[in-house]
Length: 81
Image (cartoon, rainbow, N blue to C red; front, top):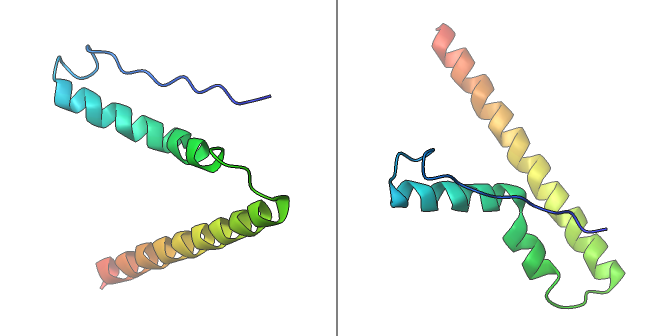
């Protein structure tokens, strides 16, 4: 069964500023991954290709998280000295 995404932004949250509303909505859509899943499901992919892409995405995500941890570690180290 498909995952149902409920993304909404209230006018009250953004104090009536339409630009803020659009930015907040865009952030929420990206966080949910709606556009990415729509692009992925647009055409049929062979299961082997889907697995390969999933593996590549996971590797990139791991590298990105590792870099993030390293930068945080460096900042902590620099702050102490």
